[in-house]
Length: 370
Image (cartoon, rainbow, N blue to C red; front, top):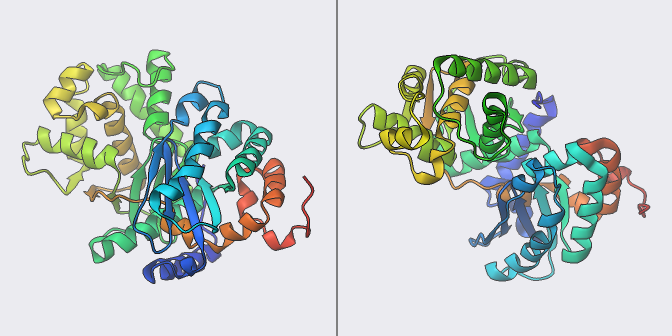
């Protein structure tokens, strides 16, 4: 779902950016954070350069209808082990930020998720919150500004993850549970009646290509992209589905051996039109796709094309970043207030879903009922 930014978002963004630019001054307190995405966990501590990580596939069992139960033991193990691997200080407030997969789990059964998060905390000592889409957008844009500085010449970044995507700006953003793998899965179901991930999507006939494009326009419209981003926006793509998949494919097709740092909508359309009729392996060979991106390349190309059309962008800049949500999490005062009142948060998660994050921890009773 997309979300308009309320007026307080600009103030929050400014405050969070100040904290990041100052080296996450909020991190002067003893804090450890865990960025819990769709394919694993990364850990960080303010003032420490190390970012140890653990690979865990959360989307696989979720999209297969099995929930998160089988991922909880490796999750607890990672939350226990990663700080030691990073050489972090010991007795610190520990916050886990759950992103796309955890939002998906909350949408499916928030009561069961609240039970799972209580069990994770009791076994690991880490209080995990489900971070709303708009807050993740703030983390992403501000983190990109911190890393790119004046090289960020566009109003928004495009960050395509496995489970979710963000078109994130300082004051207006769009986000959806519609990242690389989930979009590919929807397209497989629509065109191939398959829930396999990935499926044999290519080749696409002209009629199938038209169906795929119309389907994406419909899904983005239903998600509210026009309401979230009513004016045309310029985007810089920062994540690997574009920087190592779509971008190099377009560069190869247009014989740019040195690569490209931007692409146009006509270039993208031509790459799709003249290659969609080939099978996966032949298309990947023609476009020089890395094996790990080959299965998703066609759906990635279509997704980027649809996003450029929907946002009115004629050009997409490309700048790969090793961007995590850790700086934003470590500087997030609201989130750490919930660490101290996690039982209360879990109760609100049961009642309110993901929006529980935005409620006021100060309004919790002194001792939250279990």
